Amino acid sequence: MTTNTNEDLQDLRKAEWKVRTELAAAYRLVALFGWDDLVFTHLSARVPGPDHHFLINPYGLLFHEITASSLVKVDKNGEVVESGSVSRVNPAGFTIHSAVHMGREDAGAVMHLHAPDGVAVSAHRDGLLPLSQTAMLCLDHLSYHDYEGVALNLDERERLIRDLGDKSMMLLRNHGVLTAGKDVPETFTYLYFLMKACEIQVRALACGPTYLPSEQAIATTAEQSQQLGMASALTWPALVRLLDSKNPGYGV
Image (tube, rainbow, N blue to C red):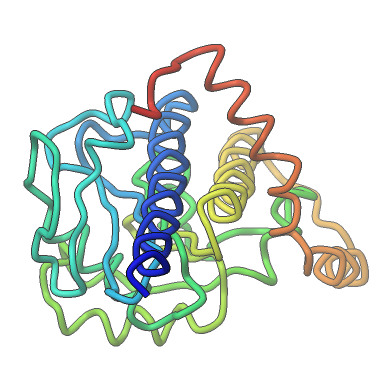
């Protein structure tokens, strides 16, 4: 019995380290793509196991500095369970992430950014427009949440998860973007598509009058987008190779 328990603990530690390494890589990829906002905004991931613990960045480190061991483990109330040299977490960041993790059992990871193009589209009256193939691949996965102020009010969690529903992408009005997926690779893939769609929209609108595809084309692309998360099987290994060539050392 003891041997099996020890083996189970070892398996959980290995599984947690895998999630830590992937999440640290995601932080550094956000910095690499220029989507970070000093020490603000957050990426989080559920820790494997029965304890309902989550990993989030220590408040004060830049995204390109994050390592697997520096991530802070918190419980569902935001209380620190385990940390590295920095144990602070941002309460506003935890409000948003805890809402999704607690409201969606399928959300193994949650990513939230204040990147300018994402904020710009979140503030556009019509939100994300079908101006590109990339945007059309996102539309059927997308929801919206109205701005209520800096997310310090725990009551907002109920409204945020209601607005997210079963979607994998969200525009937080006048605030930024959010994605949720089964794991870090899938969630980052959603994030990449959403951010790319926002970047294209900002450029397209700056060019003058835009051309919209037909309703049939939009509907067809929505149908084709249903397996979008599965692209992570190809995108994530490629992203890790890119990161290893630019900013290695996150897996320590």
